[in-house]
Image 1 (tube, rainbow, N blue to C red):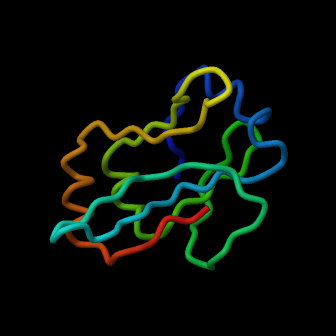
Image 2: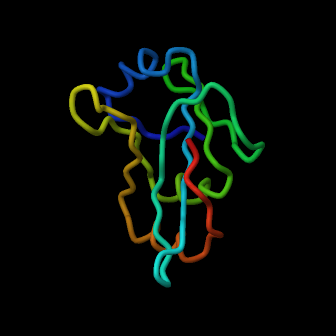
Length: 115
């Protein structure tokens, strides 16, 4: 499986990665009776858990995603993009149907932010 990538990120990804894999993950925490969370994307030197699935590399950069996100990423047409400004740029994941993320949050177990 390969994630869609905006063209400007595709070119910059090897520079941003500096030899590290790109990890697509999520966090979900309870807050006053509801679950809040987000999909995250970042570079890590090592994986903390054996729960990641290897995706197709992008411009020579290894890409892994949490196994619980696979259906959401493949069925939802997820796109990797650059977000933030100047020195605060980071990789973000955009979903064309954000309501699918809400459905995911309601069904997934709580999971603390990694990083």
